[in-house]
Length: 573
Image (cartoon, rainbow, N blue to C red):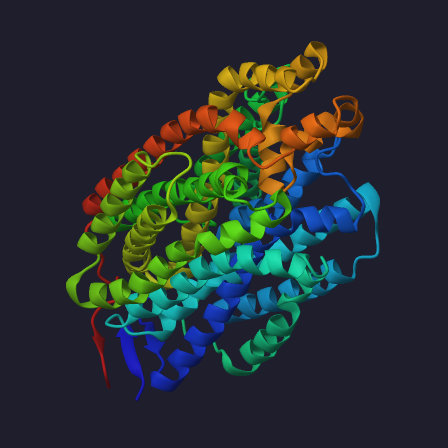
């Protein structure tokens, strides 16, 4: 029996929510799409050394850091920029139609990435462009999946369904780290090829089985709104990305003219977008949705939570790969894979509470689950401050498990709050805005937390590195020159699984100081010993900031309250 829901949007329209069989088909397919899109955000992180080695490019060589950043961030930036537009197009032309197109685009881009024959910087640029195309497909998938689930499930089951989908996405982001490490060790093309069978199956399945059941709104595309929104976000994210790069003798580029122009220009263009959206007849995004307390509060909580969570992921990876794993006998080349393995408790925590919190919030409301989850995440960040740099693993595992449990408790109820708060004919745009909050929060977190750690390293690392290198026979002038290099290069080296000291000194210097000193300098304890003090100082600042962000997300969730569907009462005919 179908379930009917009256809508409060177009006059006389009634929204039809399908029965049990179709809703599980919709959930299964959209969960596969979300899993694939989110996995490809993280799978490249671990695989970057193998990818650049495969196309014969040194990612840390002169002029290549930009290629590294775009390979790392391009997919994420494009996804963040386009999800609202793709969601709104889905509201107008059909969410399933746009979702299906996303599966097809994503799959074709994955095939092209795996088959790319180009080498050198040309090969890197081709891969970056194809990752952007893949990001367009990912944006179509992420923007419409939540709306399709909301259309398919009655209100009493939406939290559970959304929880399953969200947890699949979060799990995929961590499994991508593991899978990338395993596949990159065999052949770098497999990193992209692994998505192809799932993409083909998901595309065919989606075209055959999914159907549009949501409310559509006849409207014209808001070209100026789409253009200004995309341009403003792109400029802001470019500024955030290039702010991490050295500029004019400074360790970071935040004061550089181009970065400032991008940040100020992006803000100005987004202000123009807001003005346009108040004047056009069919806006890309109805700004009046922000007058809905649940949508505004839930969206702000989503942004703040992802800023905290994204920072946690990168800080933990740097902590493990740059210090802890080498001190415990792991080679630098193996640290990317093992950092993913040692972060598994966090994924277990997500899985443990995600669907359950969603299901319980269907019956008891979302407020206390989302608020309690973020409050607990803030406490777990503060607890991480008390761990020494060379910690015992099991207390660390317990804390990241607790963090995963808390974030899982927040995610599904928060999404239910957002999706229930909007009219049925705005679900695509609202789903896209939710994805924008998530992706923008992640990009912001990278800029914020990398900057905090780099700032902490800039003040103390050069002196410690100079003294340590001179003690091992490196000439003072060479030691000072190496120690004066921007810390971002050192961090990226550890992040990519390169031996930082071997990369910084080079073969010629290592030969000059003799095999005994060279073995010490490139050993597993020398670099962690240099960086542990300055890095811990940066960690204290970063985790304190993350705790504040999560606490603010908890307050925002409490203010947002519980959200009830804006579609009238649902009744079974």
